[in-house]
Length: 219
Image (tube, rainbow, N blue to C red; front, side, top):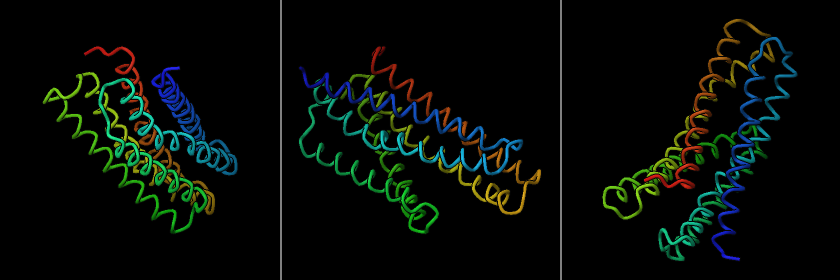
């Protein structure tokens, strides 16, 4: 079997579980903002969504090194061995952070690690956006591939936007659980979820465009 077929298979699997997991989180968020449900039900759905969210985050952390191997095997870029080690090192550190955040949910260390993860996403996204623009302008890569890298960089920004939009949800939602529902708290919850869903939908569009460029290669 050609090695590029194997890496391509892993790449597709990661995309499938990434999108599939995110859809589960998407639906959980919609149910969590429903004021006609009991807080216990909404809380359970939200907890389930956070558990499901582990899968797309894991796929997100793995897809870059896997994509790097696929890129090399397809002959799009000849990649030095050092960069493979670096990409896997970053990926494993990221996965370790994701696991620690999950195990320490609600603790100060989880918040600190979430900030580290947030800035990691920002740095990686910015690196990919800059690299794609340079490669496109200088003809270093095929145009469709440069654009694919650019969109993947934007995926990191979309992931950051999801975290930013979701943060205002936590306080009013917990207040509903402790002090009861009010129109103001429900409005704050709905607003935060609606903004988060816009960011999630943006992520879906970016992933769909990336898959289209990788398959069709229109440029």
